[in-house]
Length: 151
Image (cartoon, rainbow, N blue to C red):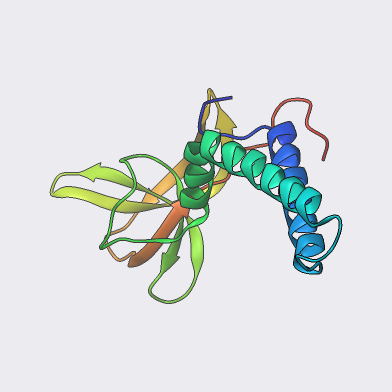
């Protein structure tokens, strides 16, 4: 697993820390400074926030990478790497698996006309090129489940 991917355990840890910080915030928000437990509640809330903030800082690159993988990217902003299969949204509104491929005049979009498979750490597919494909947005294909992951 690369540094920009969170494991299931890291995701669970982040969710638990967020739940704890949220819970302590709600409890703290319901008390007044006159409450005998005010300082203890404040300390609990500050500790929970500090632990959550530290976790978020430590995992920021992976969180940003995950958000980027989920985003549809306009072709005016950026194009995918040559030969890399991606989800592509056509001007017509249809969605398919496409890749940019070399052509005599530069490059063309190529559509997956058969199956796509994940092998040697990357997506692969059979392609059909056409200069009429009008792709307006794209996003990365998802990674397959990790070996041994429960479905």
